Amino acid sequence: MAVDEKDDMLIFADDEQNDDSLFSDDAEAVSTSTMTDPLEGTPWKLLVVDDDEEIHNITKMVLSDYQFENRPLQLISAFSGKEAIEVLNREEDISLILLDVVMETDDAGLRCVKAIREELNNHTVRIILRTGQPGQAPEQEVIVEYDINDYKAKTELTSQKLFTVVTSSLRSYRHIKTINHNRLGLEKIISASSNLFEVQSFNHFAAGILSQLTSILQLDRSSLYVNISSLSAIQEDEDHEYNILAATGEFASEVNHNITDLVPNDVKKCLISAAQKHESIFTDNTYTGYFETRKGEHNLLYLQWKRKLTETDKDLISIFATNVAIAFENISLNHEIIQTQKEVIFTLSEVVEGRSKETANHIRRVAAVSCMIAQKLGMRDHDIEIIRLASPMHDIGKIGIPDAILKKPGKLTAEEFEIMKQHAEIGYNVFKHSKREMMVAAGIIAHQHHEKWNGTGYPQGLKGEGIHIQGRVTALSDVVDALANKRCYKEAWKLEDIVKIIKEEKGKHFDPQIVDIFLDSLDEFTEIQKKYPS
Picture 1 (cartoon, rainbow, N blue to C red):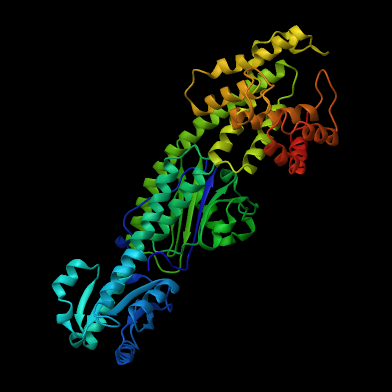
Picture 2: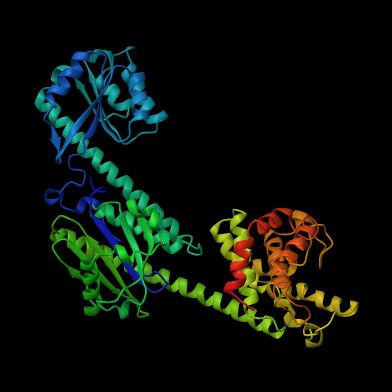
């Protein structure tokens, strides 16, 4: 079957953009006559449903030596429609059912068909009705009204005809499984394409490509999409980092891990050769694709399997490579735009913080702590990324505060503090006309990060869940970081003192749930402080 070949696939890419790779045509375009079946020796499961034990014995005898695509049959017996449903609930991947019509009732077989299709929602298994009483269920009526694949009188099912109908049914089942696998791969690609702002969108897109390619080329589902750092600098005797961006099958648990030690030397030699020659290379059982984007990024796709490549295989791979390289080029450009936006945001935030004599790392720490809390709140990856990008702009409004107040080393007077409080409104006004999701979030955070859970904050006096979750998360992140680091008007606090004040302000200044998350994450908070020192 097309999706289960015991082979390996690696896709290698250069640069953090995770750029180029591959697309294609129908899996059936591959010549099946030259292929080694990936499940050779694994039986096709055939369910015989009949209340006559002799029918089971005869069927087993006739099909005892049967093989299709180097795979034998495994016959499973059921003696009633009810028992058949129990077997289908218990057994996976039953390919074909030989189903009697008249068993515990005159229409037990027909009821069983309806249950399989409508209650079990199994539209993949092939069903052949067999009857010893054709008049009981007229063929034309049954074929029209029931989702079956063939209808045979038991008297006409000779050994040769049984062989023919089983073979055609198994071939049909195999085609359906291939189509379903293709559909799942396409759904992954479509999902990733429509959600490019998701943190893992490149990984999802790559996973969809792997799913498609393994089906199209009849490879194993165990496959990898791997990022190689500094590909252009590869030397044959150098160790290299291979970071898995997407994986299927047995490699699925290795996503985001380094596999340098798992890449054999012969694979590295293929990669180095293609990279140095700047061209794709075919051998009898491997393909190393070389791709270079318009930005000069180098990317490699490596495939290997046991059987010898046919010319059709090579054509399919080339078409797939060309089409998906274009798709990844577009994703890469979109990714570059997003990266540029991020850089502008952090640069602007650093300028504001620098003006108030805070270190640039303050905004990085606030972003990291906000992400940590958002993750533990169970927020979606997309929403976590929005908080990561928007939280550094919480004090953007300080750009409108005079230096004499902003940089004053001592305590502010009541009048000065009223002016300082205006930075929340100023920050909101900077973003209020934008319809971009990230800018809207930045406006909310700038406006609400000084609101308090009990309603005593500013500038709006919002209370409880009336404060946006983005504002509540950033509020705690900003305060704990300010306490933990030296400012022009104070020394850094010890962790135990920070914990004490945060506990005291639970349900007053801060959302109680967010406080609990922070208190359970002190080790992570400490690591963030070490990573981005003042």
